[in-house]
Length: 101
Image (spheres, rainbow, N blue to C red):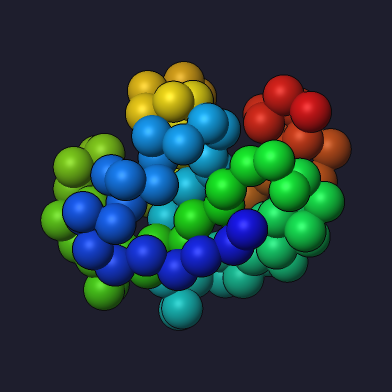
């Protein structure tokens, strides 16, 4: 599932559910536009995971909470716990390795 999230309460409830990849992005960010189709593709392939997209301009508190200073930033959560962080564009094979699939 790929979902756009703006609210912290919604975010907090979703990351508690198994493995979740969070993509912090902005509409004006070139590398974000390059990683977006990869994230969308993997969201369709890995139905046992949740994929969240968070626009840093619309949810600055969430970005600050996780110290997102550069975008794209990808965070991987497992059962509510942050397990991995990737800053910048990554090609599909590296993103799959990052997820652990």
